[in-house]
Amino acid sequence: MACCGCNDNGNVAVKDVDKLDQILSKYEGVKGSLISILQDVQGLYEYLPIEALNYVSEVTGIKLAKIYGVATFYTQFRLDPVGKHVILLCQGTACHVNGSKAIEEAICEELEINEGETTKDGLFTLTNVACLGCCSLSPVMMIDGEVYGKLTPKKTREILKTIRAEEE
Ligand code: FES
Image (cartoon, rainbow, N blue to C red; front, side, top):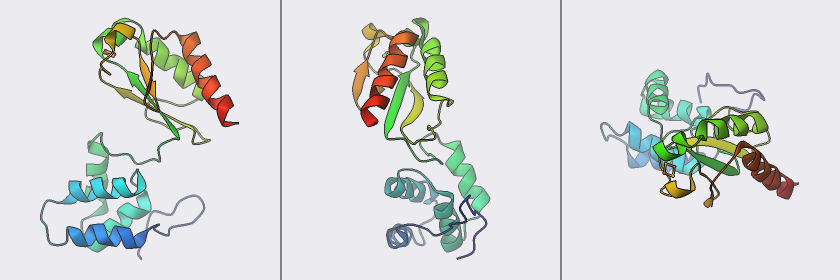
């Protein structure tokens, strides 16, 4: 396999290559299927590993720059692995008015990440989202499907610390 995406540990092997091949053969000869391919690849790995994108490029003949461009253009695609706990922080109008930015700052500071990133230990990913549908509880975040409302920066930090403690 040709490769230009060596990662830190020099491991360039594509995991689950058989399943990746199945995805690619499903779309073989289908024009305009790049987005569908990337959706399926993300379904396989839960994100888009650069090794997999290289492989897709090699097999389909689509230039890596084009694949990468599509992968970074659409917010549905992730180039990094998702943490064990995904924090969906609402930035809808009600939450925004009630201080979601301060909550975001507290999360980023507590976890030492920026929005869209995953902590080094792979425990948390922070993602801003639009209205979660429980505006009366604003500001609101959702972690692992559970809603946390009426947040303050302090309360938010405590929630994160509790989850982290449970993992230790
Ligand atoms: S605006 Fe945040 S839940 Fe509706």
